[in-house]
Amino acid sequence: MVALGNYHGPLQNVVAAMKAPAGGTLAEALARLLFERHEAEFRRLRPDFAVPVPLYWGCRLGRGVDGAETMARALAGRLRLPMPPRLVVRSRRTEPQKGLPPRARFRNVRDAFAVRANYHLEDACALVVDDTLTTGATCSEIAWVLKQSGAAVVHVAVLARAQGANR
Image (cartoon, rainbow, N blue to C red; front, side, top):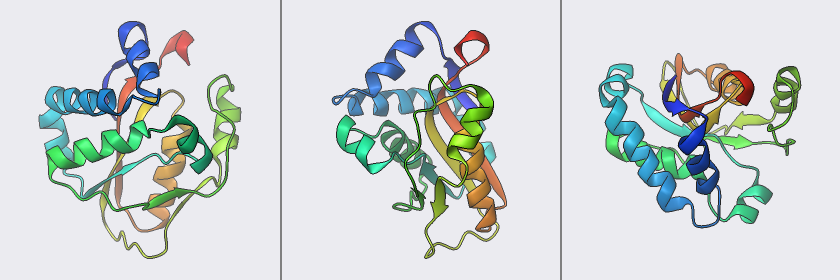
């Protein structure tokens, strides 16, 4: 996992601001900063493609911006990677992870994602992109469906990693 920093203070505030309707520009700037700080590590991981953690369509309409998708597109551009459209889809609505205890987070996202049938991922190295990682439940579930579809390795890039009381 590659992270810009811990989920507290200013980074917590900008991640929250990124989820507002006008947050696309901020998401792109933060992805650039993540890349600049960890370019060597991203290059060493050698991902074949980037994939954002998908929002449920209703949430996307409500927010007007998809921060993970904006970040994934920015990172893919800097790394000259493809970002296959809708490679991973959210197959059902889930409760917001925020506020759920760790075990409930894993149950909440179980079977909530799928890889679209027209993608072949044999031996691929994926880069999953999201804004925040707390328990890792969402990214773990997406990694599982990617591996079930043939991916050999799944790496994760996030802006913030929640630790301690923020989890």
